[in-house]
Image (cartoon, rainbow, N blue to C red):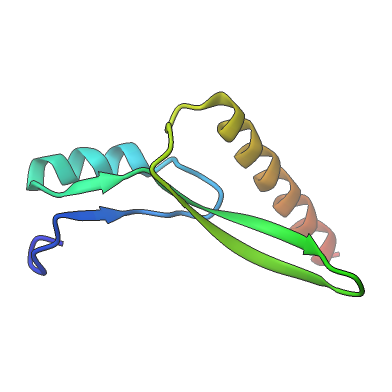
Length: 87
């Protein structure tokens, strides 16, 4: 980020904010603002098909308990889906 002269960036991991605090600490040391971010996995049921989307969310309260619970549910759901697919 510094080499490209970026002032602001966001780290968006899939369904977790676990890396945000470390990224923000590193960004602060380097003079780069790191926004809170996450990429939420979303299954959308359409009329006759399903779509799997990735929703980018930025600038939220990292410690919001409702958001943390939502992400835990998504991760658990994805894990169950992966386990079922591997059988």
